[in-house]
Image (cartoon, rainbow, N blue to C red; front, side):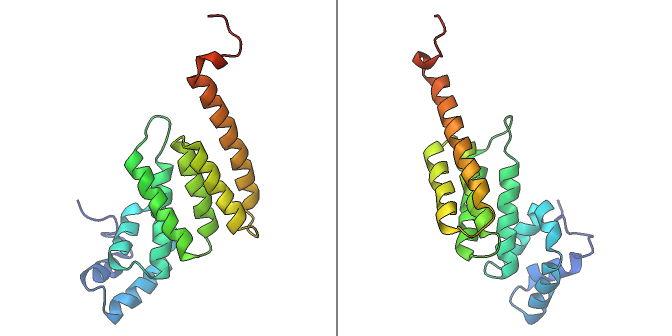
Amino acid sequence: ISPPWKGSARSTEMEFILKEPETDDAKKALEVLRRWSATLSYNPDACEGILKVSTTSLYAKYARYYLASFYQNRMTKNWYNEDLLNEAIDLYRQVVADKIDVSAEAQYRIAQCYLIKEDFATAATEAQKLIDNFSDNNIVEEAKKLLKEIEEKRKKKEIETHPQYDLGKEK
């Protein structure tokens, strides 16, 4: 299987970066690809390719975010992969540590991932970290809503798993 960038408009830059990542020309090619970043959110293979070459560039920091988003967005009611979700959490944590403009959203998405895992206590802790550490960010209001959603889902799960809370139905 050839990489997804094969034959694309950026194929030459990507191939060069992968062959000789430490050269000045590769760094220039990486800068060209930085301008191509809008497509990263739809291309996990390109993100992984960038991360093989550079883990510290600003471009790589965004590649981590987009790759984590791709992994998280794969989770549905019918398809759940614990390893992929854990990988998304790890990548999001790196984005938060990188302190870039999407770090607050990455923190929010960590909370969402734990909600998907039905780890309600950790999800609430992660949402609260967003409120505490990114208080000046617009996403704080969403985090407050997420905290309410986490509590509602925790209560619902508790009712589902404890028959004595079956809302007074006769057995």
